[in-house]
Image (cartoon, one colour):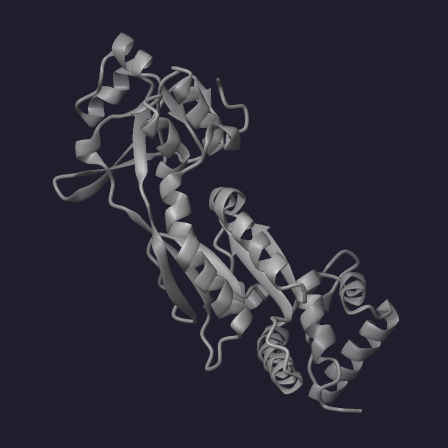
Length: 305
């Protein structure tokens, strides 16, 4: 028995959530995976997994060993690829990102990355919570706004702005607000954010919108604004095409909030795997232009003609 035995099984459980899923991933039996983990726990003299009837989670020792084991496996795969003359990417790439950015911008780029690297397994997880990528075994996280986790390296991918806008017909009928407080007299289209963000006198300020339309989907909120239902505030990529085409007009531009940075984050390590650096390079090359173009009407669920 080698001291390496069980490490691959541990990483597979961490990434897939159950013994059965890990076994399918590794193309081995569930009993083999269970036995490998039991032997690994015996050799290390510690419990690596919390087991219940429904789920498996890592202990603190399990998280630490999993992170180190993942690095070992990545470097092993890279060394074998170099030795064989194979320069392609192998292993697994796990990505977490906010839902909106993920659905419309990250997913197409991740798909391109997967198609260009047939030996690379790609997992893309959409979540608006702040995922602990070290504890949960993700290779890359897409984040927005200020970042302060010193365990992670950050790569700037550009920025996104919030734009407040409405249809020309709505503004012609209801008037164009010149001050933030004038929104009190307008129909606000409320999305997933409870407050709208503005900047006044060099300081960030917020406004709590009220209206009869609420939806936690940015494209649907934008479509409602295009239809003339009211004023919305959305990330600029949702509204870019409609603004260019004149179907929406910006309002309160003098109070536009500061641009919010978009980052690619990954765990700090001495040797960053190529599967990570290549994907981040793709994002850096393609994401800013894609976000600047925004979404076309066909990208908007329930878009109004």
